[in-house]
Image 1 (cartoon, one colour):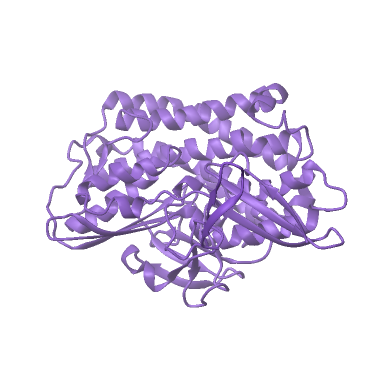
Image 2: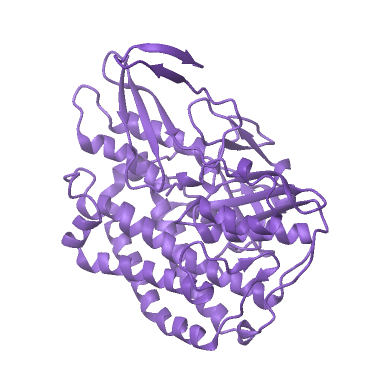
Length: 472
C-alpha cells in the first residue's frame, strides 16, 4: 500500500496533515486527518485564580481570542453566580459580532476565495491572497475592509484588537463611549454593502462548483447550534439544540451546565484533537457538525431582515438541512451580513451607553460552565475551583473539535472522488485540503488529548541510527 501525505494543510489556522492510503490499483483505500499540535491549556491553568482565566485562555488563539474571552467569562460568571448588568451583556454581544465579522472575512477572502476566484487547479504559487489581489482587486479590497472593520469594533470597545482584557468576570471593565458608538455606526452601511455584494457574487459563481458541492462532505450528519427561546439564531446566550440529518429536533433546551449529558469526548490515536460525539447515539455513530452551516440548519431564522431573506434563498438553493460542507462558505457570508445587522441594532439601543457594565462577587459556586457560539461553532469552557477560587480542573471543547469526526469523513469522501494515485495532480490534493478549509478549522484551539494518544518518541544517534524507541 502506498501513502500520500499532505503536510502541512495550507491556508488554515494551526497545524495539520493528511495521510491518503492507496491500494495497489492507485485507488484511495483510507485517509486520516491529523492535528499535529497540542497546547495543554487545561493543565497549566490549574492553580490559577479563576478570574485570570479569560485573559489566559484568550492566548489559545490569535484569530478568535474574543470567543475564548467570552466563554471563559461566562464560566466565571457561573462560579460567582452573577449575571452581568444588561449593558454589560449587550457590550459582550457587540464585541462578539465584531469578532464574527473579522473572522468570517478572514476565512472567506484570505483563506478560501483563492480557490473560487483562481480555480482549484490554478498555479499553487499564485493561489493565495496575493494572487487574489492581482486577479480580483475589488474582492480583495472588500475582504481587507471587512476584516479591518471587525477589528476596529473590537479595538473601539476593548482598546486592543487582540487578547483584549476588557471582557472580565461579571461583565466588561469599561462602558461604551458615545463617540465610539457613532464611529462604528457610521461604518456599518459601507460594510453591509460589501457583504451584500460579496453574497451576490458568490451566488453567481456557485454553478461552477457542482462537482465540488456534490463531493465536499455531503454525508448527512446531525447538527448542533445555539438558539433563542423562539428558535432563532443566537450566538452569545442561547440554548444548545441538536437536529438530525432530516432536520428533526433530536435534543433541545440544553443549558451549558448540562452539556455533558449530551456530548461525549473520544480520544483518537492519531490526533491531538479529541472527537466529541452525541452521547445518546454513541461513538463513533454520533457524528454532528457545528459552525455556520450547522447554525443555519438548526435555527428557524436569523431574526434580522436581510439575513433572513438570504437564509430563505439559501434553503431554496441548497436544501433544508443543507449537507454539503462546501456550503459552509455560503452560510458564513450570510452570518457576516447578520453580524453587521446585529451590530447596528445593538448600537441603536439607547441603553448601550449605560455606565453600569459589571457585577462583582467572589466564589459562590465551585463549578462553572460557559457556552457560546464562536465563529467556527459551539465553544464550551468548564471549570472547577476550590474554596479560594483556584482552578482545580478545566475542560475546553473547542468548535473545531466538534467537527473533528465530520472533517475526517469529508477528507475521505473528497479523496476518493478526486485523487487518482496513477496520475497525481496538485489540484486533486488541493481539493482534499479545501474541504478542510471549508470548515475553517482553528487548530491552535486544539488544546488537549487525554493521554491515550499513540505517541512515539525516537532517539536517533549522530549517524542517523535508531538508538531507542518509546511507544508505538
